[in-house]
Length: 305
Image (tube, rainbow, N blue to C red; front, side, top):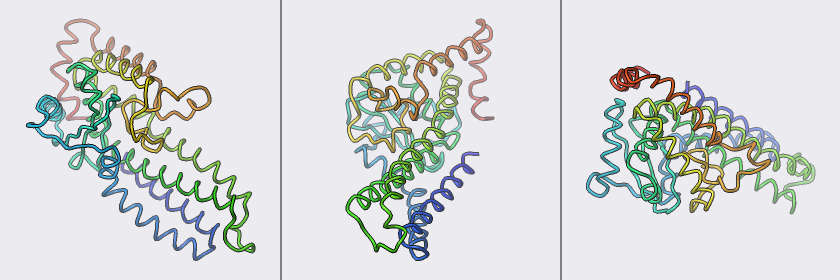
């Protein structure tokens, strides 16, 4: 399903760019846009993960440079039946984490220095299990490409805004209509936000549930989410962008996500996520025998899902 969603996103991006190219330059503009978006789709599929990691100055680590973190990821991937992803640390004191890559065989998980300082080992395991659940279900490909799409849309909207203000093109071309460009400059970023929101919200709930089943302890992720939400209200991750915010386990702009802006939040509220995990906890651990039985079936759940 995620592969189909990714294809539809790329197809939609192609149509959007061709339409905008036609507005600016007619048929020739549409053809130029087609070439441009073809190149962008290629880069997005094969290199968007590297671009995101480089943007956040992520540093790859191994079992020698970060033995504790690496051991947790290795243990979880073995339990989930996944290939070992690359592991990165982002040099930032704001706690957060994300996963990226085009498939489980080319995946990476990244955590900030802040999350390693703030959370306990069990809470970190809950966070990493959440990210590996994204890897398992190919959410990372869709999310990373969505980040590229949102960035491209923001770039187009910015060009339209300045073109409308200062003028551009010949007066007899449709692209010179400043009112059309102003409207598009306003609507395109909203469209980008809706794309990110539609992709992210449902997947976060499912990744939370996957993490709870993988670790066998929903309370680990519950505690981590509460701490992360509270801390992220105090500051914003360095280099954080609206286009990549949906990739993180908690919205890096939590402190600003209020009033009308919350309608376009890429994440469900932490309160709702914690409540759903609580419901799952009662469902899984109705009694001690159920908990014991569930612990034995964790690996089967992920291998068969």
